[in-house]
Structure formats: C-alpha cells, structure tokens
Amino acid sequence: MINIRSKLTYQFVGLVSTVLILFSFGVYFFSKLYLEKRFFNRLQDKAITTATLLFDLQTSDKTILKLVNISEKSTLSDESIYVYDEANKKLVFESQEPYSALFSDLIPTLQKQNKEIFFEASYHQTFAIKLKKGKLSYWIIVRAIDGNAKEALEDLRKILFVMGWIGVLLLGLSGWFFADKALAPMAGIIRQVNDIFPSNVEKRVTHPNKTDEIGLLVSTFNHLLDRIEQAFVMQKMFIANVSHELKNPLTKIYAQLEVSLLQQRSPAVYENTLRSLQEDTRSIIQLTNTLLTLANTVIDHESVQFSAIRVDELLWDAKTQLQKWHEEYKVQLNFDEFPEDEEALIILGNEASLKVVFMNLMDNACKFSPNHTVSVHFLANLEHITIRFCNSGNRIPEDELPFIFNPFFRSNSTAKAVKGHGVGLAIVSQVIKLHQANIEVQSDENTTIFTIKLCHISK
Image (tube, rainbow, N blue to C red; front, side):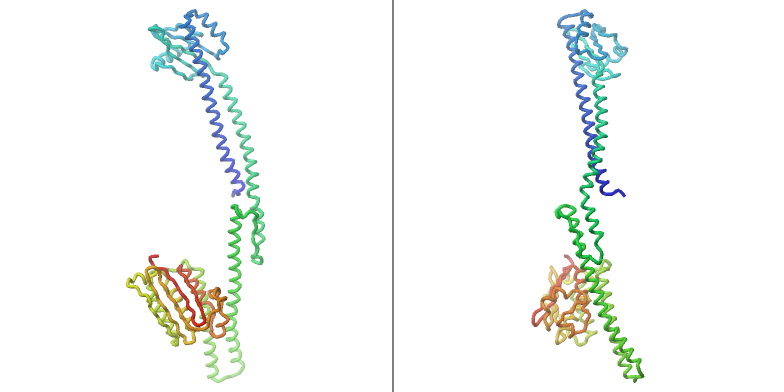
C-alpha cells in the first residue's frame, strides 16, 4: 500500500507537472504562431517590394530586379519570386526557375481563391497576392524556407523538454520534503498512541496546534479515549457489582446447604431450608434475567422491532401484570388528558421493552412507597404523550439524582430498607434512549415523580 507521504508527493508532482506541460505546449504553440506571422510579414514585404519595382518604377529588366533582390539584406532561404500575368497566362518575372507544381497546382488554386493566401507546403512558406495594373491582373508569388524559425523551434523543443524533466525532478524532491514536513506531527502522534494501554488509559495525545486538521483529529481521538476510559470504569464497576450481587445469595445458599448436611434434621426444617433456597435461587434468576435484558437493550438495539402501539392499553397491561405478581401493590391510572383522536394515543416503539419500562417504574414507586401505591397520570395530545409516575415516600437526595440510572446504583436512603439490585432504572434509561424519548425525575420531601415524554407516531 502507498503511504500518505508518497501519495501526496505523487499528487503534487502530477498536478504541477500537468500545469508545466500545458504551459510548455502553450509557449511552443504561441512561439510557432509568432514566427509564422513574422515570416508572413517578410514574404508580404518581398511581394510589395517586387510590385513597386515592377509596376510603379516600371523596371521591367529582369536582371535589374534580380540584382535588387540579391542586394537586399533580408534575403530569405531558398527564396523564389514569381510574377504571373493572368491574362496572358505567363510569367513576367521569376527569380528562379519555376518549380514543377507552380503551373499545375498553385496557379489554378490562386485563380479559384482570388485573394491573398499564405500556406506551407514541402517545407516552403508561400505568399501570393493579386494586383491590378490597368486592365491586367498579376499574381505576385513569394516562396521561401523559414530556416531560422525551424531552428528556433527545434531549440525551443529541446529547452522545454530538458527543463521539463528538471522541473519534474525538483518537484518530486520538494514535494517529498514538504509532504514529510506536513506529516511530521503524525509520527509523534503515532508514538503517543502506541504508548496508551488499558493500564494508562487516562493518558491523552497532545498536539501544539489545536486548530489545524491534525489538532482536530487529536481532539476527536482524545474524546474517543474519554469514552473508552468511561467504558473501562463502568466495566470494572459492573463486574464488581455483579460479583457482589451474585456472591451474597450464592454464599447464603452454600451456607444453608452446609448447615443442613451437618446433621440429620426433621422434614419441617428441610422444607424451610428448601424454601429459603428457592427464594435465593429466584433472586439470582431475577438478577440474571434483568442483566440479560439490559445487555440486549444496550448491545443488540438494532434488532429491536418497532411497531405502532397504543400507550393507554399498554399501561393497563403493565398494571395488570404487575398486580398479578404483587397483589399488595395499588396502581391508580389517571387519564387527565384523553384525546378524541385515537391517533394521538399511538407511538412507534417496541411493545415488550416499553412494558418493562412501565412495570419497572410502577414497581419502584410501589416498593418505595409506605402504602405501596403509585399514581400514574396520562396526558396525550398531537405533539407527544406524557406519563407521570408519582409516589410518596423518602426523598431521593439531590446529589444522587444524576446517578440513579447507572447500573447497580442504589440510594443510601433506600438500599437497606428495600431489597433490589439497582438494575431496573438502568434498563428504563436505555429503553427510553432507544425510543428517542425523555425521562425526568423530581423528588421532594413527600413525593417522587418520574416523567416520560414519548413522541407521537407522526413525529
């Protein structure tokens, strides 16, 4: 695989080389046009000079015309001048013997064009112009080779070719140098990242310039490390809490079995022991099921199926199910705002997980209420559905409110009075996040209120 340094160098060399090539072609092309135009002007001057001598000064002696032509300093390479009488179809002046294609190709072409022309053929540039003298028409043809221009263009090609390769070489070296300089901070960042291990996950990557692209990358990576560190801490706490929650019932089970095996006992004692073991086993099963529910909600949330749910009916189902398990619980449902449109009662969600949320909140409210009573207030409109779970009892300390949704967190004011594992509210929080809803907690001296706001299905 090509590294970034090489890739940047290749891209830089390729881009600038393309610009240089286009520039070189432009220089060559416009130089060629300039030389052609300059030679065209020289041929035109020759034609005008010849016409002046022949017609204005009426110098008809061919020898004198040739001597004048030869004496000029601007004699062109392989120059030949012809004056063709169109009416009599003959040459009235030639500086050299006519070439073979003069009468067969050029003159018929001139008669068709009937205007001045300039073209190149067989290394010769040819200029022809038509002049009228009285009733007669004459074509003045000047033909020559622009040897100087060809040599200049050849030299220019060589210069552009050599300088182009030198430029590409210099571009490659400079591109490599600047790419190395631009990526130099990355080497330091790589070394810092390689020094980060689970044992020192609190370490962070540093970069002097926090506003450039590398600085933004470092900042993003440090935010990732923050989340990883938090995950490590939560993992350690989770393992410690699970171990503690499982250790107590397992230790109790082992102790009861060990005591039962010390000596022969009556059937009634064995029955009491088995009932105690059953209760401890039920506690372990409840804890493991709750942990599985939490894990499925957090890890496998993408597989959760959503469908249209009537929240009022789901509340009734949760109330009925909870009171089957705990006959002493009292759940009071109050539909304070009940819409006429049934669509306002429907949300998009997962029925099983939302039922767990409602049962957990009802169960917590009843457990921590002296009279085991929860009052549920239901308010629905076209914007959202609001459900409040209210119970009387001990106040949740304000400094503990931010932590009540953490797994295994239990308030000091209730941990000893009520049995539990501290996982229920963690499940509630994850399910609420899964449904993109909100949950708030308010607690004073007499009342604790959990408020859920669920978005309507149309939202």
